[in-house]
Each structure stands twice: as C-alpha cells, then as structure tokens.
Amino acid sequence: MGKAAARREHRYFCRTKAGWLTLCLLLLCVLLLSLRFGSSGMDWQSFFGGLLRQEGFEAQSVILYSLRLPRLLQGVLAGIGLSVSGVLLQSVTGNDLASPNIIGVNAGAGFAVILILSYFPAAVMGLPLAAFLGAFLTTLAIMAIANRVDSSKATVILAGIAVQAVLSAGISFFSLLDTDVLVSYNYFSVGGLSNSSIDLLWLPGTIIFLGLAVSLAFSGKIQLLCLGDSMALSLGVKVKQVRMLCLVCASASAAAVVSFAGLLGFVGLMVPHISRKLAGTQTAPLLAVSAAVGSILVLTADLVGRTAFAPSEVPVGIVMSLIGAPFFFILLMRRRSARPC
Picture 1 (cartoon, one colour):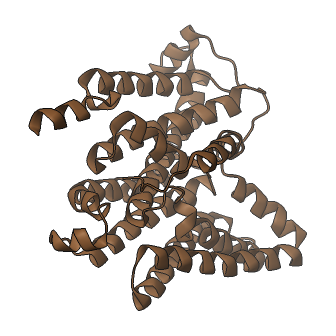
Picture 2 (cartoon, helix red, strand yellow; picture 1 turned 120 degrees about the horizontal axis):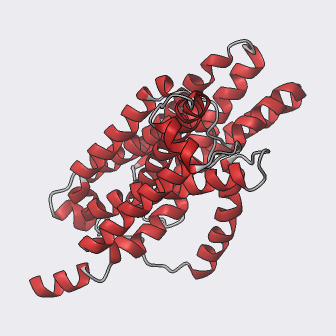
C-alpha cells in the first residue's frame, strides 16, 4: 500500500520536487513582471535603478514602491485568501461549485458598503472596515441559522442562499433610491487592486495568513470530512465543530480580501479545481498549491488589465470575470456527482 500511495502521489505534478520548484519559479516570474510592467513605460535599466533606489531613478522608485509594490501585495493576498476560502468551502460542503459567495461574503459586504454610502457618504475611509464586518457578520448569521437546524452541508448552503437573497434585495432597494450611490457601489462591486497602501494591508494580511495556518493545522480532520459525516464521526472527528471552524476561516479570509479588493469573483471557484489537477485531493498540499496558484492567477489578470489597454486600465475583477465565466460553464457541463475531495 505504501508503494501504491507513493505512485498515486507522484502522479500529480506539484507533489514532486520538480513540480514545486516550477510552481515557485512561475510565481517569482509573475511577481517580477507585475513590478516591471504597468500603464507607465519603464525599461529594464530604469526598473532595476528604481528597485535599487539608485541616484537618478527617483521617479521610478516612487512608482515601484508607492504604486506597484502595494498592488502586488494586494494581488498575492487576494489570491491566497480567496483560494484558501474556496478550498475549505468545497471540502466541507461537498459542493464543487461552492465559492466564497455561497457563505454570503459578497452579499454581506455589498450591503454594508451600500448602507455606508447611503447614510454616511463622507465616511469613505470606513468602507474597507464596513465591507469586512458586513461579510463576516453575514457569514456568522448563516452559520447560526445552520447550527440551529442541523449544521449539515445542505443546510449551510440553503441558509446562505436565503440570506444572500434578502441582502441582494436590500442592495437593489438602496441602489434605486440614489443613482450616485449606485455609481459608487458599482466601482466597489467590480473588484480592483488600486485603492490601498501597504500600511492598510497588515490587518487583512494577518487574517488571511492566520486562516491559512489554522486550515493547515486541521487539514487532516478536514480531509476526513470528505469521507462523509458518518464516516468522519466514526473516526473521531467532531464534524460540527470542524465544519464551523472551516466556515469561520473561509469567511474571515474572503472578507479580509473584500475589504481591500472589493467583490473579486471566480478566484475561489476556479483555483481549487486547477490545484486538484496539480496536487491531488489531500487537503494540506491542496491548500499550499492553491495559495500559489491563486496568487499567480490574480497577479496575471491584474497585469493584463494594466497593460492590454495602457495607459487606460481594466479592473482586475472584469478580467477575472472574462476568464471565470467560461470556466464556470465548462465546469457545469463536465460536472459529475463525485465530491471534490
């Protein structure tokens, strides 16, 4: 059995040393390109001069450290947070179409933002905090509803759908009351990486990495959940508690991303599927590979949005939608009854 398991493990590209090395090199390449290219032109000499803060390249240094580096960090954090959230949700719900949307992240964040825009339009600086609190509190409400019933996979999904419907109706209602609010909300709902500085990323970054660390620590028990609730219970897993812990980590990670990137879609849906092809279904390596793949995907989409129509810019959320919508349709057509893990 040991040899058979080893052979199965090495079927996956990212379960080998060469695969991990390739993935890391690809991530480093995307990080470099994200710093090098943008809406403003910069040759390689100017790039390295600005990167090393050499004399005569002060303007390039400002562009790199004040504009592109914060944007790069946002892309990495968004990729990690949404990808880890997607893996956890698809694992604990047994639904291969699950994404952060299913736990009310987008609806909760959107409703909180539109409330602030409607009643406190001057409090623009409070929008990130409002988005995080709206997303996280909505998820807690969904979990409370599910916990009051039976905390099963189906109950969590149905509770999420019901709460999202109510909040979406509220968003539509406030949008109709004031067209100016609708314009501001649309900018938030598209999703982008151009509104934050490094100083404002430490808190969401801490939440995202804490969620990843907790998920890795409980990866063995999460893996057993994929066998079904009855089997997991027989193996000593506290199913209810582990599922709730996963939902908290997933919602906190996704909410942290929403606080600085807006409603960035499809990452949490696509990345877990891509990563399973590369790393298999074991939770720990799947989480690690998903974090890297998510970062690569978001940074690449952002790079395309910045350079394809330079000096104009296409928000990363629009680029992700152009990629994610066809992926979703293909996934629907190829969907099987088997669970994703």
